[in-house]
Length: 281
Ligand code: HH2
Image (cartoon, rainbow, N blue to C red; front, side):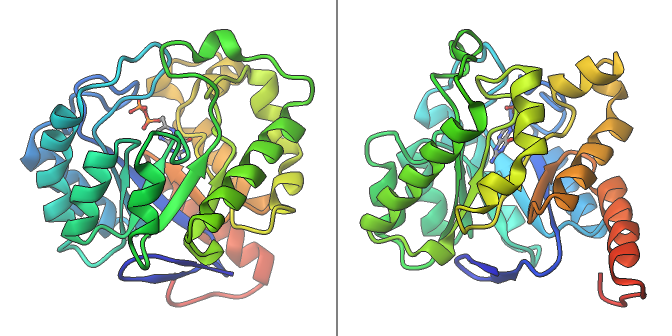
């Protein structure tokens, strides 16, 4: 399996690490840390040195309760960081739902649009359909970050998330986006309780049955706090364990804050799976 993106065809025969770079004042873990351009670029460079496979730059916090910035504000946050990241030799993803931002970063040459709203804002699908190669991640969420916690109720969460992703995949394909450009994401923590998130992990194989690679983001999220009793800053080990659990159940890409630790863990996991050393991991 592979993921077609603007400049790179990403081979998914081994698990890949997507590094989070939030250029926001208010993200739940790294908010404010990389808001200045120099800090964002340093974070991108550090993640590349640590072995990141994809950089994911975001200008909107989607933590529960967050209020979206204006499109212009979001664009002003991400554009300089994306411009710098595009020189670093790895695929660059932009975490956005906003068509104005999508168009601008795709014009710059960004490789992937990572949309927590799965291209549902008016005009978003057209941006991707108009582009011949850009990759896209379609994520499941109900409502908006400021309303989603009240919407965390399902009959069977795995069946409902799978049905949503299957429908969005069909819709983007019908608009002209080839399936090889698309990966799917269950949206851990987005309108979901800890029980919902854990059901999505335990039964991840039902999402794999949709036929596209899965991207999952457990890094530092609330369910790991529920499981360990630790605050956001103390969830490194839990985050790495969750990433490994997701990969062991077939996830192709893990979206993480802690690139070096996750890359190390995946090296060991993969060596155990294969029974020999690989030079180019
Ligand atoms: N989670 C967050 C943001 N974007 N994108 C995908 N595809 N999957 C996710 O699970 C996901 C995502 C939330 O995490 P973070 O970016 O660290 O925080 P914030 O939204 O507060 O910036």
